[in-house]
Image 1 (cartoon, rainbow, N blue to C red):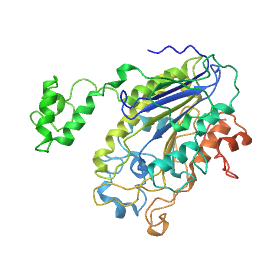
Image 2: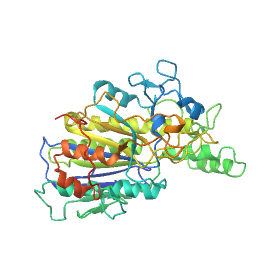
Image 3: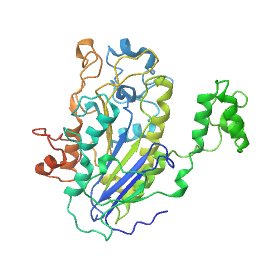
Image 4: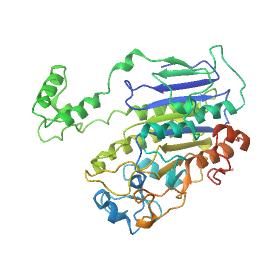
Length: 407
């Protein structure tokens, strides 16, 4: 455990070795117990918003992606109902519970202010929040815009891991610490590699024999009897994913009276070009459990929290020839937390008829991602319109979205 002695902290964790493709960064100046909390979760790789929140009520849906669709709500293995037109992926059970209690707001047909379909370029624009690529992120500028009441002798920050996401980089001084134990991969990774090599006559057997020599059992590798390659055997509860561990730690730190109030988390694994229907439940389940761990860690502070879950762009409306989807435009964003006016679907649905698609391929964007963030910053954190212009350079006359959070 790392003891945080500063009243002001900017904690970053981008520990690819210890916690897979997840990372955490936290920060805020001199908090008080009753201050609002704000968490941003980046899903790197472009989440298919129409798989996470499926518009099963749109009559044109089946013509584009019949091979990807799950049964409608009420059927075995079906979607979780969100009011009669949209359905949530069945892996998102905890999120569905948030929706039912009014603390989750999916916002559909969302996109950034850019139209790049390059992961790296789009992520830079999304995290910088500007019309050009910058070396600082908009969430760091949020921290800078809040009243600074205290600065420790080492500056106002500490980073845990190998890097801090661009979203949180900026003028704040950030130290770095990477635990030596972080160099050991998650055991589940070995099972995944075994599955990838299972049918290769050269590497498959050699890989399994090498792991057996290191003490891994066939059951653990999912290769004994009728076990599915790469699938862990039934029994004890699965080990928490890196994202779930980080999210729980994030919630606990934000809940502390002297802890930070601003956080950034990230998780990868969303680039589903092939076999999407079988691949997507894994990362969605990890996301769902992580969001549940975040809430559990926050405890009573959940009532003063807003979580924004965002991704760099969506995916094509049409399924491709390998059972996946390619880089697109419009997608879904999620707002969660006790401060959110949830239990409904936000945004404007553009429709899926051929004439309604963006560039004849993508879900047409109807809501600017920056407007969502600006609405939270203005109504939840109290930033002025002038401050919002500094946080999002070049946003011009873009108005903050209203009605997202409780007054």
